[in-house]
Image (cartoon, rainbow, N blue to C red; front, side, top):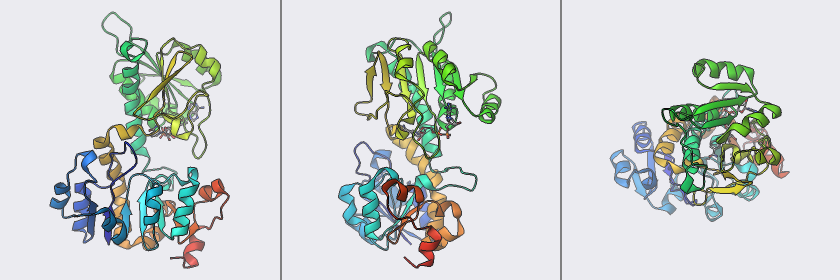
Length: 374
Ligand SMILES: NC(=O)c1ccc[n+]([C@@H]2O[C@H](COP(=O)([O-])OP(=O)(O)OC[C@H]3O[C@@H](n4cnc5c(N)ncnc54)[C@H](O)[C@@H]3O)[C@@H](O)[C@H]2O)c1
C-alpha cells in the first residue's frame, strides 16, 4: 500500500502523524511511505530522517493525489476539502460531530474517513485518545504553576512551598486519565492534592495506585463548593463520554475562590466544566473572570509536539499496520475497534452520533459494506 503523511497546516499544530521509526516499520512490511517535505520539522524530524528510514519525500500534491492511505493528525480544513477523493482512506482526528461542513465534504467526496477518536475497543476504551489525555493531564499543573506566579498575574504562590512554608493546594475535578496524570505531577511538584471523583470504583483504584498520597473525595456540588474555596489551583478533568462536560463550577462558586487563583479547564474540548469557561489558544491562553485566571486551551498537547507526536504514533501505528497489511476493507472487517473508527465510507455516514449531530442519514457500517459502497 502507498501510505502518505501530510504536513499539518492548522495554526500552531506541530505534530506529525508518523515518526521515522514508524515509517521504517511500514517500509519493512513492504509498504511505500511518502512524506510531505517538512512534515516532521515541528516535531524535530527533518526530511532526511524519513529518507534514512526508507520513506520518499514528496510534494503536497503528490502525497494527497497518489496515496492509498493518508495519515494526518488534525481534521482537514476548508482549503484541503478539494483534495478529498474516492479511493483514498484518511486516518486522523476528525471530530466531525462538531463540524458540519467537513462532514458534508467527506460524504460528497466518496472518501473513507477513519477517526482516531472513535476507534473503540470492546471494553469501551478509546486507545487513540488516551495518550493526549495523559499529556494534557501532565501539562495542567505545569500551566497552573506558571500562571500562579505573580508576574503572570497569579497569586504568587509556589506549588511545592519550601521547608517551613505550606505548599499550594491543588483541586482536581475528575480522576480519570487527565485527572490521575495531573495529580501525579502536582504531587511531584510538592503540592497538596485533592481529587474529586464520582466513581467509587475509580477512587478505589486511585487510592491503590497513589498509595494514599492524595485526598480522594466523592464529587458532589456541596463538596466542590467547600473544596474550591481552599484551592490555589483547580484543574477541570471530568468527562461524561459522548456528552458535553457538566458545568460543575458555577459562577457563584467562582466568586468564593481566592483572588488570583488559577483554573485550568482541561475539559474545555467538551465545552468545559465551569459556567465561565470558553476555549483559548496557546497564543493567548488565559483570561480572568471574578479574579480567577482561566486557562482553557483546547489543544494542550500541541504545546509539546516532540512528546505528543511520539505518544500519538505509538498508539496509531498498530492500526496503520492493520489497514496497510490487510487493506482497508478487510482490516475493518477483522477488527471491530477499527470498524468503530469509520465515520464516513462511500458517501455514507456510518457513525450514528455524527449523522444525528447534523440531522443527516445514518447507514450502519455493515449495511454500507453489504451495499458495496466501496
Ligand atoms: N484540553 C485538551 O487539550 C485536552 C486533551 C486531552 C483530553 N481533554 C479532555 O479532558 C477531559 C477528561 O478526559 P479523560 O481522558 O481524563 O477522561 P476519563 O473518562 O478518563 O476521565 C473522566 C473522569 O471524570 C469523572 N467524572 C464524571 N463526572 C464527574 C463529576 N461530576 N465529578 C467528578 N468526576 C466526574 C469520571 O468518573 C471519570 O473518571 C475530556 O473532556 C477530554 O476530552 C482535553
